[in-house]
Structure formats: C-alpha cells, structure tokens
Image (cartoon, helix red, strand yellow):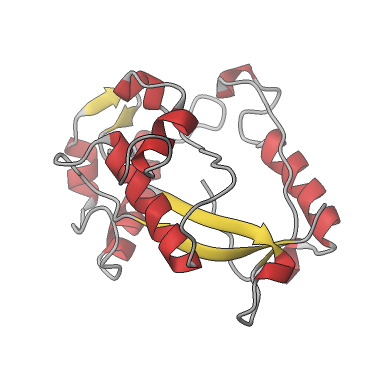
Length: 76
Length: 128
C-alpha cells in the first residue's frame, strides 16, 4: 500500500439539522477538511454513507456532493 | 434472548450506560440520564427493540483530506497504516453465528497484518 497521511480533518456536529440540506451538511464537513489542509481543491472525492437512498431518496452522493464543494460550474 | 434465555430488561445497562456517559461529552447526541423504569416503559420500535435500545436519529458528516505522506510537513504525521474490507450477509439472522462479526474479524485481521501491529498495540478503537 502506498504511504499516505492525513493532511486535514473536518466535521459537523451530530444532531438535527433541519435547516441544512444533505449537500450542505456533506459540503460543510468536506470544506472544513480542505480548509484545515490548506487546499483550494482536491483531486478526488470519495463518499461513504448509509441510508441516503432510503431517507433522502438520493443516490450518487460523490457527484452530488462535489456541487456542495463548489466544484464544476457552481461556486460555494 | 431466545438462544441464551436473556430477558429484554437485561439489555437495559447498555442504554443506561451510554446515556450516562453522554452527560460528560458536550458533543454527544443526547444529554439525558435514563433509568431502568424509563427503559422498560419506552415504546417498541420493532419488537423486541424499543426506542431506547435503538440508535437515535442524527445527521452529520466528517471528512478527511488524504495525501501522499511526503506532502505532510507538520509532525507528528498521521499515516494511514492499513485499509481492509470484508463483507457478510445483510441480515444478522442469516449468519452461521449471529453473535460473531465475521466480516469485522476478517477485515481487521488483514489490516493488523498490513500495519504490522496487533490489537494490544491499539490505543483507541472507533467502532460502528
């Protein structure tokens, strides 16, 4: 296995975030990790999640959350 | 309960302990001590699992930025020593032994070997 290390971390509080969307919650954590790492962009995003298709009706979280990170045409 | 003769109230300490520990952690999901009586009175979610047996709902996210190790200049470096995965049947009741987490065993064994450590070398286990 290639030698890799953690450059930055970020997380949201765990609770009831009625005012936030799935994209905002995921984006907040990823953005915080990027800020901690001092990075403006990343090469790849890997998403782990349980139950989003069931409770949110949302699959394809990798692509979905890239927009939350301001990648593509939408700016954060 | 069926195989070993335990009663539902025998499982109360798990929930009571978790709720009690949470009082000391400002980041805990809930901050409420519960009693055996409250445990036994709580609503059934899916028999025999009641509201206080089950995980509460909660939302949140966590993220890490992982880079080639040589890019991390600050010390100490947090290296990813190993990564392994294994699968099992979705339903616990379909397994040979519902009380043994075969996938957890296989994947952790492989991870220990990759990292060159044993369980006794680990300070903290984050389990889910």
